[in-house]
Length: 85
Image (cartoon, rainbow, N blue to C red; front, side, top):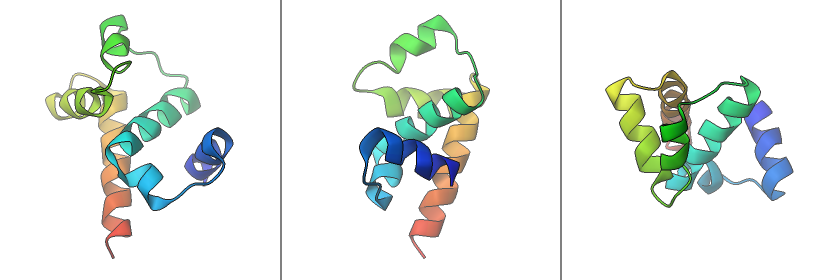
């Protein structure tokens, strides 16, 4: 519910696509970063500022180099599983 409220405040209307698309992973990551007041390495912040933010988050999560990215990817995948039912 907190993620939904976060995205509704940002975009107004929230659909599954807003969460489960490539940019959705970025939205989930930004939500967790704000909610947990988590800091990220400066170099990683630069990587997530461009058009390849979802790829950078996925890569960091799968390599285990950013725990926030790992949590974001986990939450995103759980949403993807629920959305496909």
